[in-house]
Image 1 (cartoon, helix red, strand yellow):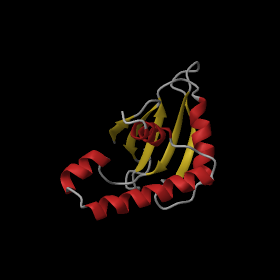
Image 2 (image 1 turned 45 degrees about the vertical axis):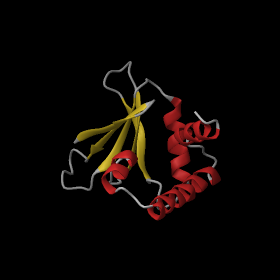
Image 3 (image 1 turned 30 degrees about the horizontal axis):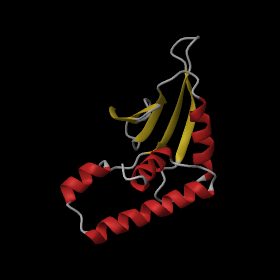
Length: 133
């Protein structure tokens, strides 16, 4: 349906199944690089995380537009909302709202860590915060 974001190794689209146009939208994450093994690891990790603040994995596989090309993909639950900076700008949250958001994030990260995963973007932010950059 539309491009919604781009990260270091994937592009995220808001999508619906081609044969089920009235279905709920999903997040379709497509690898930027061929045969990216991180997608298999992410799919395996997401299959073990069951937390209300972590999108559920619905499906995964490989898209082969040509016989010699294979791009991994993941389909996850679509979570409607704004990126964090847009939300903060629009809401001008109070200290209490920020603390509630951070507590929810900490619980989601705990669930991810308990399943054996690390969220690298959050690790980068924590590194920058701890080292005063």
